[in-house]
Image (cartoon, rainbow, N blue to C red; front, side, top):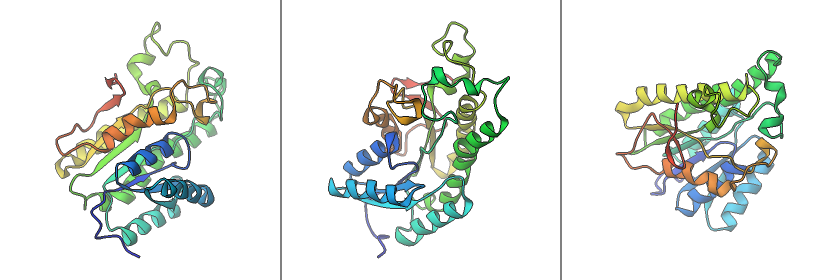
Length: 255
């Protein structure tokens, strides 16, 4: 059954069956949006969507592997057929490459000894996957009166902070995979923002902070809901909002 005539805004969140993505989807649902739960695993995606529906949200699962072109294409076709447009895209799906360990334990990312296949795998999800999903969804986003794209970045992506030997990132092992992938995502965000500025599509990179999730071995000190708050803030901007920026909870983040 088509929902193309609905007045609800339509939001797609990738990697939304758990963690920050799920928390963002929950909050968007609370705000009255129709939320599409993008998840690689169809069962987990449907479980998350069912939980949101039980809480009163209008939520639907969308099977979506950002590294699989056919999966991305099928997801875009689903949104097209069911809703006819997209108002919000949160590119949240991401991996570190090191598994569920804390950043200080990610010694397999050290540039001089890193496995090149790891670097490729991380970039495939964190950068190329964002390009694939964004491009597939752009025709639908162009139909929105105020479309917003939020790319989930990281404070670790700040080249300025990373280059400071006395800065807050100085205690972390050097990274040739995750950190450069998020820095590349930031650069990509600016390029999309520049291209889409004239179309009124707002594109921003957002760092949710150090959130307690599997991506850091559950060592974060923020809850997923706390981390998701800043994502939701930039996913609900009005037409006069910023574009091409890098933001965190406290405001503008250093590039």
